[in-house]
Amino acid sequence: MERLPHTNSVNKAIGANSVACKTLGTDAASHDDSAHKKQDSMPKKQPYVSHQPDSHGHIHYSDDENGMWQALLERQAEQIPNRACPAYLDGLKKLNLPATRIPQLHDIDEVLQATTGWQTAAVPALISFGKFFKLLANKSFPVATFIRRFDDMDYIEEPDIFHEIVGHCPLLTHPAFATFNETYGKLGLNATKEERWFLARLYWFTIEFGLVGQNKGSRRIYGGGILSSPSETVYALNAGSEQQAEPQHQPQNQPEHRAFDLLDVLRTPYRIDHIQPIYYVIDDLDTLFDIVNSDIMGMVKQAMSLGLFEPSYAVKNA
Ligand SMILES: [Fe+2]
View 1 (cartoon, rainbow, N blue to C red):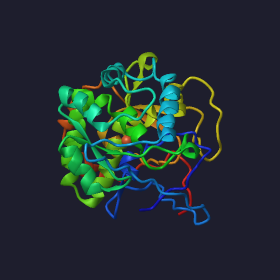
View 2 (tube, helix red, strand yellow; view 1 turned 180 degrees about the horizontal axis):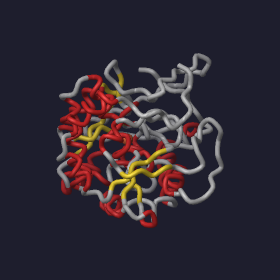
View 3 (spheres, rainbow, N blue to C red; view 1 turned 90 degrees about the vertical axis):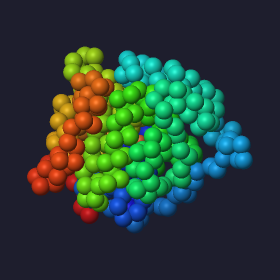
View 4 (cartoon, rainbow, N blue to C red; view 1 turned 30 degrees about the vertical axis):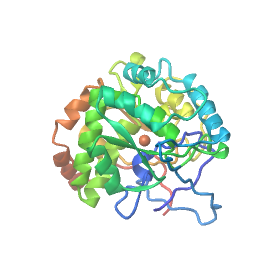
């Protein structure tokens, strides 16, 4: 799988790119749409490896790993009040995540099963796109059971357990969010390779980087890629104030909020290695029901024939 350059100057949390980087293989949408490639000069880092559960299904984490969880959770707890949507905060309360240790997946599953019938599935750091879709179609949310190292605290390419659990699991207790994921999995299973690339944009601009709320003043975040990133949690809603731009990585001072339009979303390029220049906004979470009840694959075909919009960011040379 093509890896993107590690960009420490981008203060972005792990795993914003769960569609793009959870998967591997030729059918993975493991790309940014500008198709820039790994720099050969980049030093190779130690790959992440998921933990295996013991015979009782328990995963043992070290003190350092539990300490990383605690640090990440404390940091993010400062950012999400009044920024995350109420359904996310309700889900977070239901999950009742431990503050000082990485939770066990069976504890998460108890809550998900009781609310929407979902569960988690422990997976390796990278899985095939086919497996990703199959799990979602069967109401199983893939969770790689490793946590980032200290030197990756602000940015990492692979989605870790913090991103999956804190970013996504709270909203998996919400029927519309859960149904959207299930439908997405079923569509993806039957999609062609090219159709999957377009579908990846739908996931990106909703489940990973979606905003909710027509009224700008009460607009909130539901995308897990944002909600597991302290800096992006602030930036995504901070459209009215000046940002400290980081040349080449921060595309503009303020993000652009666009009303959700399925065809537009499918045609919008994205990159995974910097904070997003564009967010799409749905009216409320139940809009996700409307989306799954629409002709998504018909729109995919239309988007394929129309092609992508021009990127809103500087395109790096391939
Ligand atoms: Fe994700």
